Length: 224
Image 1 (tube, helix red, strand yellow):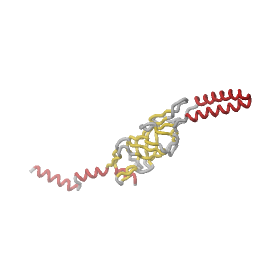
Image 2: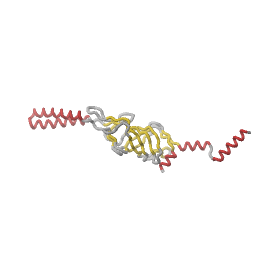
Image 3: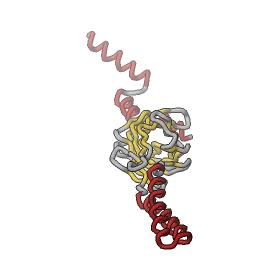
């Protein structure tokens, strides 16, 4: 008798709410969406970054430039803000060593203010000139300029040779070339290589490093 009363009471309660447990589960599933690990999201940088002035821990600001869609639903709208930080900075050396920059993305902020924490890194830099990706962590490295240094030395040596030849003949040319070469070498040794510099609007391809679950109802609200 008690069991029958409990069943009847439960049935009445479900009848009052009008929502079955199965419907509640289905509704919860509809409200969530997953962004798979390895998803690549195109971004545009919102501020200039240079290894000449950047420091570890400095903030990075970017914005998505194209929507990411799952099952005909926009999960990451274009115009979503992406925030990160600089993890490593290395200035170019005077004798060797290229400039390096490493940044990680830590959150996405939708237009409504809905914020999603993420682990994101740089996968590619299609908008940055004279740079390349050093490793799978997303380290951006300035291209080498050894040829430029050698050319600078040769140019200075040639100038010295011309001046020496005009003033003292062949012997002066040799002395001038030697002095110019030494001067060019000194300039190369005292000068740093090129810094990595990323201008506002630079295209960056971010890769999401692990699966992220988002509330699609809040995304829909943000997209309206």
